[in-house]
Image 1 (cartoon, rainbow, N blue to C red):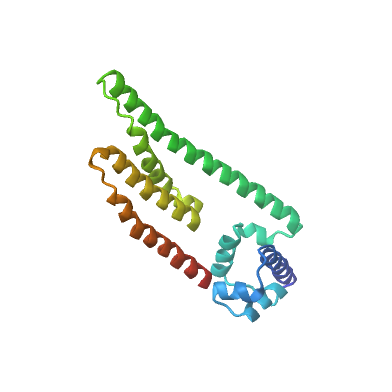
Image 2: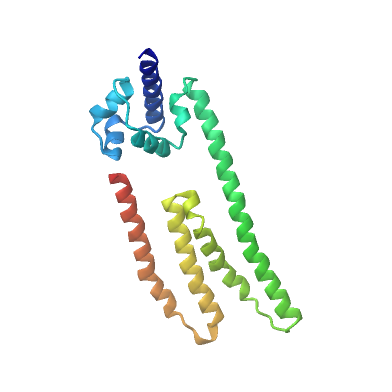
Amino acid sequence: MEESKNLRIIIAKNLTALRKNRKLTQSELAERFGYSDKAVSKWENGDTLPDVETLYKLCQFYNVKLDFLIDENSFENKIRYVNRMNKAIIINNALIETLYCSFVWILAGIIYIYLTFISDINFWQIFVWALPATSLLMLLFKKVWKNKVYNFVIQTIFFWTLVIACYVQFIQYNIWPLFILMIPIQIALTLHFAINDKLKIIK
């Protein structure tokens, strides 16, 4: 019984520290997870514990493992460790994404060299087409980054570079209306981003 009480106190302290570290009030956290502020207050006082599913969601929200909540080491040391791990993960993901994107440009270079020296065709537009191809590849990483702004920016870059590539490829036809077509597409992307952002706040 005593061990159970001590565990509740440790989890309570860690939950409180994590919330304050995010600069959230108990009411804001409660609203985000669909609980009352009284329920959050009981968690942080050690009176009760959230159910397992809620604890898992809290860990995901704070980007920590369950071990973090039951560890009684100083919060500052644990936060420093988590921040170092998160930074390492971000750098690793960025390097992997850069590596994959470099393959697009290597392939574009190979195609350009082949057409120039073997077929005597100066297909320099391949490097323009590499822009939407790169942004499309970057969209595959949206589940890795889990960032709405990243997704919005890359989608915007993809559509604009695709239009630019089409215009450059068929420049003799002067298909400038493609840029007008981008106006409603950009509005749709912006509205989609704004709606998702609002829903995230409500949740």
